[in-house]
Image (cartoon, rainbow, N blue to C red; front, side, top):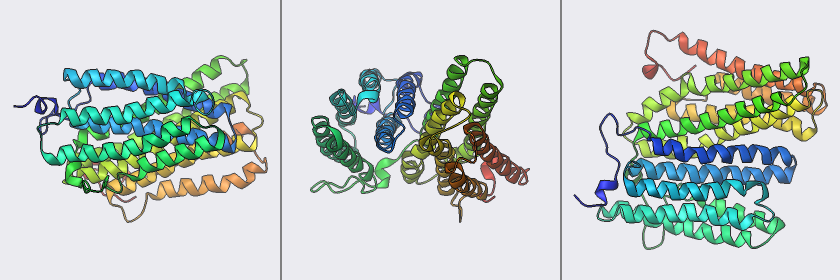
Length: 402
């Protein structure tokens, strides 16, 4: 057995998809990153601020999900892989700490940390799979080519300022986002295939679910910390209850049945790479973004329950809207539904219809927050009752439609 083979994650055993403690330790860096993102959005509630935070949010997700793909292939319990994760943690802390000032004086730190994580991790993977099948090596070589190309624009963007930085970084992120859909095609190396992306479905599903928990945890932390600083009063208490109920409803929508059924499906799929790419790599960013934006909305409602600016109103509605959109698409893809869940479509329509009167200031911030939370609660109840009607069929075998 070669040294490189000793670094690969096992397949087929009961523990092969288990998330290791070192991976959970690694995720703590991204607890900090999520906190930084929500605070940065709160401090820059404007169109340009929203665009900048969106770019960084997707970048943070992208570096995390790519690392999850690597630890799906490589065994994080092996010393070289574990040391590699520790190196990524250090870079991740630098990346996270630079988020609030990434578009000012800490742009180079953000870009350099990001490129180091993306390119360095891929170089490590190429070393780790040496001696394995040529297809596996070629797959990582193609990924390296794309990440190196995007890295030029990340570093180049850090060396300019203002709109030029935003444009360079947007191009860099676009290169990374489209590369999996093009199967990392590289002249002379061809393109990867879905068989090259054979993943351990249990591991991928659990990793993404844990990131959703990270985002929900940040939401609760924001709610608790903000409420602790408020002067006791009725509006503050109501806003606190609305925020906590909103987080509980989001947990319910994602975890009550959707995550479990999707987990079962990818774990028993003959084509897990396709599902991991679409449902977990791409669509989960909408779910996570929805939770993060909702955390910002909760703080706005807690601090200013009587009134919200137009930007604040958009945030209060956009958080649940993004969350429901991500869940609707996720459940649609993972269940091969003819259409997304009706409960989620209903929630999206109602939230959209709330926007015009909200922008005309028909509601206080607290009332609007209560309405958006009520919508998510209603979606959770609708879906739960629809699925319960299918009992006694086990959850893993339930019909997909509502």
